Length: 474
Image (cartoon, rainbow, N blue to C red):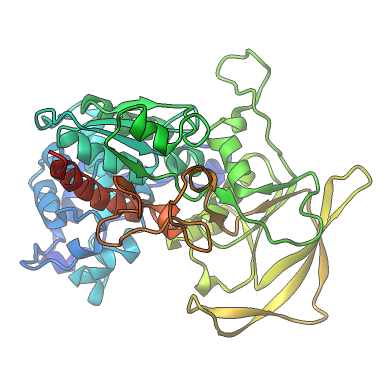
């Protein structure tokens, strides 16, 4: 072993081979072995004023948990993370550490940062698989009740923090399973559902009540919860799940899907396992299994959709993105995996029309090539159409993955709730409070689509404010 931590190279994880993994929905990275985790942890310099911690939206004590890994105290390291992050196995897999905590690592200035996410994943898996989890003792009951609307990362985090404070917490989820975007939006090969479900189950040990198939705004309104059901405060964490489309001709053809529907069918309804009704282990939810599939977009959702289509048996999968590779918002790891698996990247290209056959099924897309002009409001160079560059691309399935918007149900059924022109809830940035007394919000329903850990940070901030609000009622 090299003498100095700075001489130790960043440790990679073993992975399924591309030619094997495209035939299954099993997780692609296989994680660290114990000795590899210790070696990677040895790279941490244990800075007195760590720059990495401010980069974490939930303020995990990164040097603290890594020091425990270095000593081989893996379960203790997991518990250290859980002091501020209730979903370490999830975050270790799907959070963009490379643009948050890791980018601020001192080692990143001259080389590669400490693999914080990989270490987080390792200790969370070690604790769970070894059945070493410990449930912290909540504070004495306060007698206050809090309703959490939505079981995504913001809602789950808010629920856990409030339950630890002794409040009675109920999470209402519109779908039939808990997890929000974590369960319907992220494929099995990136986030195995059994792992997510086990982390959610930890909430019940804190006393949190979980109610599924509960569409707040249709079943009960926020006013009903606070006046008839006795809740003292409400947190809205419903996410941004309304799909967006391009508005081009032919989007209503059979075979054109939003990424929301495509991924929800596969992930939540397990449509990839579609078989005969009643057949053991099979799903009864169908899904399009195109031979030539085009996914439109350049984010993580687009990568997830393209890689899912490949695993469903597509012979060719095209990812069409109107900007260049450098402008893609997807994680570098996801882009790399997609390329390894044979996804064709058609950059600076966008469909301007979808063509159908005589039965109304998609048969092709009219594509237009683009060039990059001046930067737009996002800071990225604006794509500009190249006249005369149109061509026809034969496809039988298209998946639109260009973003999502705010679901309007809560806003439409909550009189007086302040929203902005895009339909997102307006809050006090410091507290998460809406303009209605006792009503708070956070996550994608406030910011639009963001990262899992940013939503968790919003949930933590709101929980602290709700706790202070409840104390003021006494």
